[in-house]
Image (cartoon, rainbow, N blue to C red; front, side):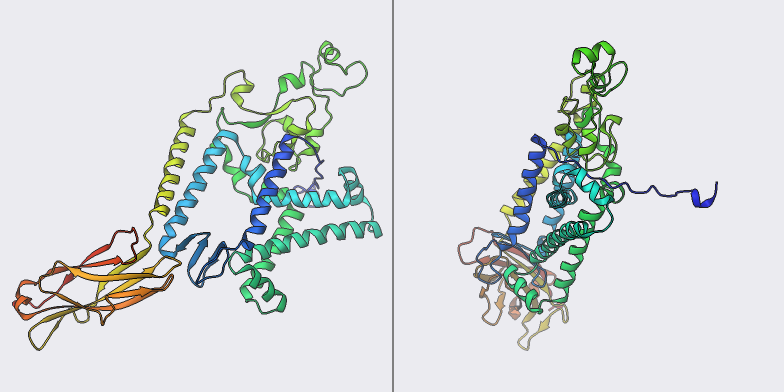
Length: 463
């Protein structure tokens, strides 16, 4: 065999999915419409703020604030992001253990955008046979118009996808005007262009190749499956019979005729294969390419393809409550509860006190001792607040902050203050290695507990 005849890579076979109607197609369409509505309209939803753009969801990286409706997330709250990622991961494991790859079939961004691009292709070029004929035709006026219109609409959707993503990081109306006038930042143009290209390629050109060759989830999904996991399955006992499947020719069309001849109920129409966006034949058993979109269930007129488990196919009962799913469910509920509790009980402000150690202390001319501290305050609210600072625990000590012991913080203001704690000469001999308690409290009637931080107070030994 010559080297030229050896094919190292399988040539791609273009997939032209056949459109179907049914409850799962309706469910996919409903989820797609909901997802697009949220994604494309959310940046335009207004939310009044006194010190930030009036955008309901805004990730302000320069200001280091994430605004999610009435919630302001600051860099100190980054553990919330870790909590959300953990919850999503556990939810993915939990749902996959129960119902297989329903995330891939209904909620994955690749699936949602590919679905829309296929709908556009179907709307412009026609049903599956018409699209296949168009692909086989040489380039002429009709092909140029239909392909050009398809690609143009894809590009429009891809551009609006990229621009919308950028809107989550910059005020949406301002960004659109700046983009049109050519005065937006380089990062905004690059992000929009990059996502436009990737969306066009992934959802329009690559399609199933992304799921088969690029997505790692297809490779490790089997580790989360068991005999009770709901998967898309073909009922071979009903469909094949003793002699396998056969076309519905004369004399073998009715169930009775087919039973007499030993044929199963599958008439080998191929509709389940034609409807599959991944191009697989579910009758060959579960395959890693299957994304559990269930369109093959809608396509099968004889109810031979269904959501079921391996145990059910073998005549046993499917167990939904099993140690794995219960464990995932408990962890998911605990993580979600903990995150919600953390958000609801967050402090409206933060305050820290650090000693200035150069020098550790200053001995005054009258024999008194003074230590200096740096007080950091952070108003986490989108409204002004008044904060009071005082000290406890060090007999005879006084606090001097140049009149800043009571300060009004602007919305989301961060500030550093200099604090001096001084003791008179008569008390200096009692405080070697002692401590002082700083108390920071809201004076606006906030329900948050005062912040109490104990810091060392230094004095010379034997003073």
